[in-house]
Image: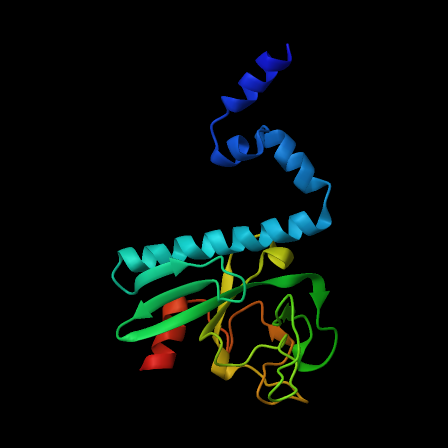
Length: 196
């Protein structure tokens, strides 16, 4: 009976099911039982849906040399726009968090810092904070607030700097529901703004 069951599992179609030797339902149940696993999957789904948008732009001839990177410490995407090579970082807005007061009231929050960090021995700066030159564009997925896989895009150069380390980006940034500078609904609009 055990070998028949194992053989049945091995006949499953998706490569992840074969890799884990488990059916999709069991994999999904495992993800459902782990908060961190769900956060990781939402991050990868945001990257997948962004990749599909970027792939469509590549097929239309707007960008070229599209690479989806999974290397620790690298931005999520590398591409070329005209003669410019650039990188894109993909993030999700925070779940259930919005600004409560002032001009930012009702805007979503995105956290722009690395998962891990340290101290730069030359400068003493915390390396968990991004430098504005570590990527050109940030693509922020709104799913955690809207349940839709839509994005807002901004150039890193246009984002607020950290109060104590001006050579780094601020950790929390407001993301408006409706695009307003420096945020755009159209990826190409950011590219044109950067390189016009």
